[in-house]
Amino acid sequence: MSLAFRMAKLQCLSALVAVSAPCAFASAVQAQGATASSPPEFARRVEHLKPGEWVWAPAVAPSGPVLIYVDLSSQIAMVYRNGIRIAATTVSSGKSGHDTPTGVFTILQKDAKHRSSLYSSAPMPFQERLTWDGVALHAGGLPGYPESHGCVHLPYEFARQLFAITDLGVTIVVEGDAQAHIRTSENSLLVPFNRRGEPVEHLALRGGEQYRWNPEAAPEGPLSIIVSKLDQRIVVLRGGTEIGCSVAIVKDTDPGSHVITLTTRNGQPHWVYVGMAGHEDDEGREVDEAITNRVDMPRAFYQLLKASLRPGATILVTNSRVGANAFAKLTVVDAIKPVP
Image (cartoon, rainbow, N blue to C red; front, side):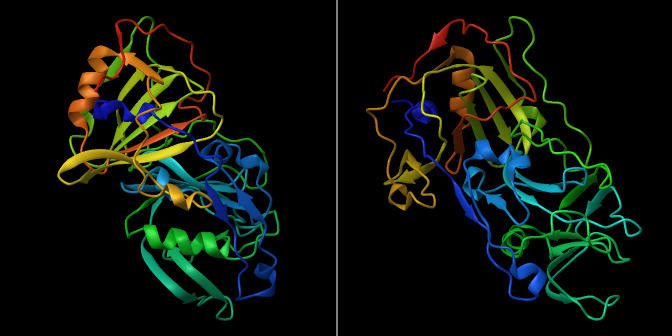
């Protein structure tokens, strides 16, 4: 089986699990502890998260640039890595009179044990500063409505996990109106902004167009491939930027998701499963050759994709959308099945 499409030989996981943990620093936060057990499909339906709940699926994109999007209107924050959503959480932003500012920010300072210089030395664990006048992301109370003095409160364990994957300079986009509450979310798993905080338009294939391939948009960086069973599309991202998109025929009725990665064993490339919580036995297991012929794609796109693969490339097969709306189903012309 050709390397480019061992991605098609997948038995999907039933869930990628993230569990919110209780915080030990204040009684208001100790109430956190609800469990959110979720595949990437649920991460897009963040309106179902209750206060204190969160989703964390970092293996979906294990490397690449990080971007954080805070939606004040829905009191939700989402984390994207290499252009793919890997996490979502409920938040509590600034209350009336202490509104969290909107705009495009970067992380200016990080302090895991920070204490407020403005509010009686109050603890602000895993603080990631957005402004020098006191606005930051950090672990804090999550009553289900805006109640901070301007900061964005996160679940304690989520804040700890986020702190571990961010660096100074990471982009944070804050949008919306906390006083005009809505409970809807963007359906697409793809990042809505670039690293400058500018909106990204993920263009649909036009008319009879079978695929698009623009590797010059991101010549370097980790490769992530999304195979959307729901949209019957393949999207390729490199360094957080979309470089390719294709129609596909994905013959997989399993509603779950799975992640595999390209590794080298004894000098030879192999696609192997990424172990997830609840499926630790999958870790390192080679993708089964018996699960074949699950995906058809245009021949030319297949060749371009195959030539771009390097060890570390990651494939997510998912029932999530890769467009904000449902795509028209297009017939794959001159389709190719992988061959050994």
